[in-house]
Image 1 (cartoon, rainbow, N blue to C red):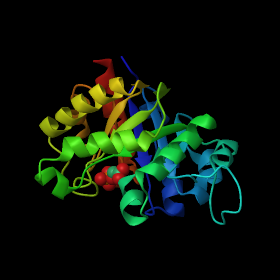
Image 2 (cartoon, helix red, strand yellow):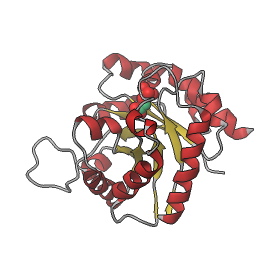
Image 3 (cartoon, protein in one colour):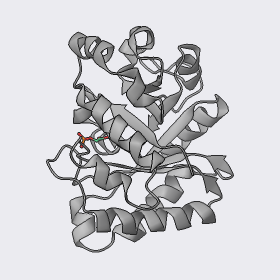
Image 4 (cartoon, rainbow, N blue to C red):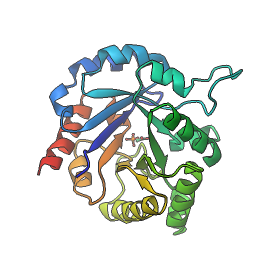
Length: 243
Ligand code: PGA
C-alpha cells in the first residue's frame, strides 16, 4: 500500500500569523503520512525553521526556465537549495489566472525532475466541461499535454475539479472514484508511478469519506490548511491507512 500524502496549499491567503500557527500543529498527526505545506516563495526559509519535523517544505510554483535573464522568476535549483521537497505544478489557479498552458506546465515538471524535486501535478476540469460531459477526454489530454515527454517517472497527480475548489462541498465520492479509475489507467499507459490525490473543499469532516475512496491516496487542502484543522485532517487520513 502506498503511503498517504497530505498537502497544504496556502495560496495567497496566509500571513505571519499563519506561520505562527504551524507551531501549534501536532507533529504526531503527520508521522503516518507524507505531508507538506506549499507556502509563498518568500516564506520558504522561515517556514523551513518553523514547520513540525514531519511536514516537508513545498513551493506553490516554479519557473519553467533553468536560469537566465528572467526577472522575478524562481528556479527549481533555487528551491532545491532552500530545502524544498515538493512543488505544486499546474494548479488550476495558475492555469486560469496566469494563462499557464500545458506546455509551460510540462517544462516546469521537467525542471522539477531534473533537480530532484517531487512534483505534484494538478489537473481538473471546469464546471462547464463537466456539465457538457466531456471531462474525461479533457482530463486525459490535460494530463498528457502537461507531461510533455515525461514518462517512466514518479509523479503524484492531484485531481482537483475546478468547480469544487474553495467551495463548501467536495465532489461526490462517485465522481472522484470515476476520475481516479481513469487517471490510474492513463498513468499506466504513460508509464507513471505515483499517488492519485484529491483536492477541492477538503476539511476535517469529509476527509474520512475521501480516505475510503479506492485509488485515492491522499488530499490537497487549501483553505483548511491555514488553521490547526490541518492536523485533524492529517490524523484522520493517517488513521485510515492503518485500518
Ligand atoms: P480548497 O483548495 O481546499 O480551499 O478547496 C484546494 C486547492 O486549491 O488546492
